[in-house]
Amino acid sequence: MGKIKRRGEVTAVLFDWDLTLAYAEGIDTYGERLQTLFQYAGLSYTVEEIEAAVRDYQINTGTIDQKAPESILQTRQNIADYYRQILVRLGYVNDNWRFYDQLYDVFAKVPIILYPDSLPILQTLKKRNLVLGIITNHSSLIRPVIHTQVGKYVSDSHVIISQDLQVYKPDPVIFRQATRQIDVMPENCLFVGDNLEVDAIGAVQQGGFGLGLWIDRETDTTSIPPLPKNVHRITSLSQIIQFV
Image (tube, rainbow, N blue to C red):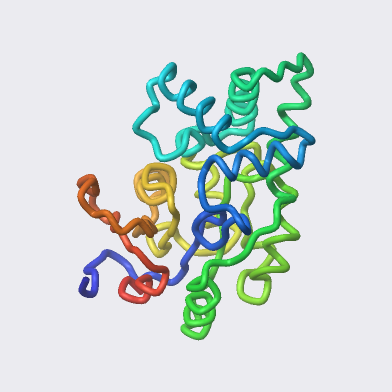
């Protein structure tokens, strides 16, 4: 992978948070992710039960080819409704919508750890005097967690959280707000995220960013889709260096 020719110099690198810089500790599969979330809400189900409920949901909604349904559900309301539908399939019914809405906040309480390549790349980019930021579709409760983990490298004012704005990636508004807060023109920004459509493509096509990088740590390269202009796939955060 060679040096990328691009319009405008990259002077800022922004990241997604969950599954890009950090992940939930001790969770290897999507079923375990939901199991942990439900456990924090006082609900106990096996991974097998949850995975069966997710498969039923995917079959009935035509999302069977998605890695995880949440990859196409980005707003708080849609995700809360998704949790409701999974729990109904598990036999749990609660007519109080607030319960499902609060599940959105619960995941911010699950212990997370950084990927091994996260701090090294932040340190390297900081040494190169690049402006660093984060844009995440997450609960506002994640802010102190982000500060604790990467506050040394990413200013609190450069952390843009969807719940604070009530706007979610890939809406152009959240990308524009981010560039205003970091005081860098969109064409000089590079965005890195694990969701191809929402992060990498969204930043370029909706946010006007100069580059979008899709961090895909999967080793199987047989199903990589054609990528639009200025959107590239990387398998390690260390590869960002090739684009700045």
